[in-house]
Length: 64
Image (cartoon, rainbow, N blue to C red):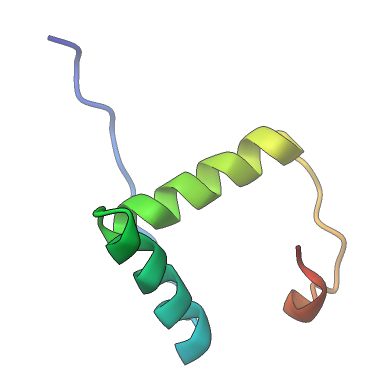
């Protein structure tokens, strides 16, 4: 059995639209909203590299 990874909790505020979209993804894939969020974060880190810099100021309307 592998040792448990340490975890940290964060709080994120979403618009109602963002929340409902993520909730729909979770429901359609029969997974939790937390799982979808972790997956999205992991995909972002893989795509952009850990320690990558964000273009600031961040405008969420221009995110892909």
